[in-house]
Length: 255
Image (cartoon, rainbow, N blue to C red; front, side):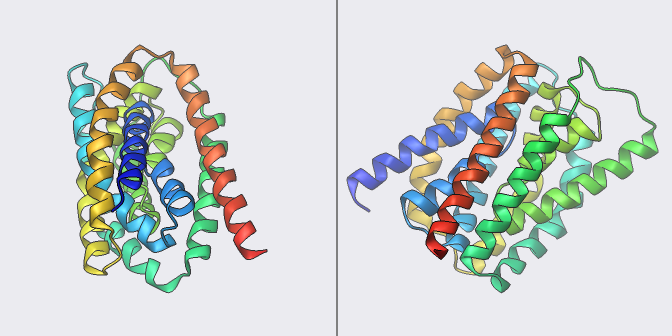
């Protein structure tokens, strides 16, 4: 790997880690388009390399948030366990799609999440729900997030944060912190499956990881201080921007 390439990957890793901790998204929303557009990775290679990147980053960020009692551990465990099998299934499903198809689908997902996040009502505290409602909704959210984690390599955080706000009716900071803890549970089997399929770029992963851990710690500190409405708006903007960049890049390749 060339020195310039390694330096750019490290700098990108810092941005990925910061975004992960700030928005609870695992960072792959940035990592995948960066690897695809800047470094020419195939769609499956970008996805496979992004997913394991989320594991140590989310663990470090979740640990930081746990000191402020923002992580709902039962929710994280329930959602994480529900997503384990679907994460493996999602990783295998990537073998049936071309790079362009994967990226176009990823773009559509991000647009949908941006709209969902924008329409989620900000809350000062979690709204009360019955235990059964919580269990069913958390299991469904975890299963969906697990599949998207395996299929799109995004760690599932974009799904988790958005749906924890929208369906579980959590405040933004609690949704972010719990999303990070949930990702750590089911990202590992999805990453292992991608590695077994031979899609992962291990040298690039190592450099990205070094930068992302640095960014994650700084991002978590900033997240704790940020106004929740501002945090929600910035997450919406990030999702919509990344979706637009990916869509434009794939359409140009097809033209």
